[in-house]
Length: 448
Image (cartoon, rainbow, N blue to C red; front, top):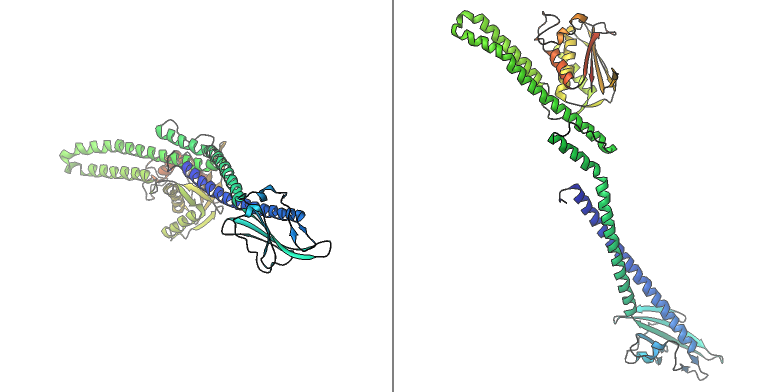
């Protein structure tokens, strides 16, 4: 697995989180177990004191008598790890268990108080429980003694070591299982990304034309945008190829004529000038077609209301003498993913023609998700004006290169051709008719 891959990073991150979590759990559980073990030891020592009390006897002389045989055999074995001491309040030792031979007598805390207990851990690794008891026998003799029972910490340490070993082994097994489960889940969750990556590679190898797989909901938008990008790029590439082919083919004839006139240039000056103008017109037309892609390398989000308002403001400055009344009817918000240069070419040419021919009014209407000819489109841009309109007989002619609706109006007659070609390449539809609202021309552009 590559270190730069998303799977590796996710797995490594989750592994670190699991290790940190299990380490924290281990520390907390070990501490809790040790506290529980110490508490259990304290209770056991208290039971040992009760056991000593049950076997001890206060004689009528006031002396304390402990039988040689005790209920707990460990008290009788030296070094057994369990020790017992009985002291008077003045620290005089009244009795000690045989197991405590050779050990220093523990010093109980000052002013312990009758009926109170004191539990501690000393620096020699032993736990002590001191219990202050006032004892009265049947004859009314009363004495105060401090019972002390001690036990080595080995028991607690052994218990904790066993628990620690078992806990860490169990956590390690659980951690390994969880890592494998996480790896399997990651493989399953990232499968849609691998599928879309494979499909993109197939597109690059020419095995596929578009992303047409069954992708998860979160990736459908990405797949749609990538398909739009691929379609636009192919359309642009096709446009460039067609433009170069058209340019080369269109210039062949003028160049051949000019070659024939080179021997007698002065006699054919007017014809040469005509061919040069013709070549200039061809170059301008083809460059306009090639430039329709704009400067951007990919589609981007465009706020259509803002875009149309900017166009109308610019055209108002160009046709300031007409004082055109622009009426825009655009949903807000209306955000589309489109090539900005293409949209400028389409909407700009149509709105410019509307301004050129209108008397006073131009209306721009945008409809989202229209349906036309049993096909769903993403957008409909409708541009109406109150000009004279175009006769139905000329609608098809003006879409041809170099043909204008009125030869007296300045222009090259290629704007509508560029619009028509561009919409066709993009898979859209262009329709023209008489405007029902303003009475002039109405252009409807359906975009996929």
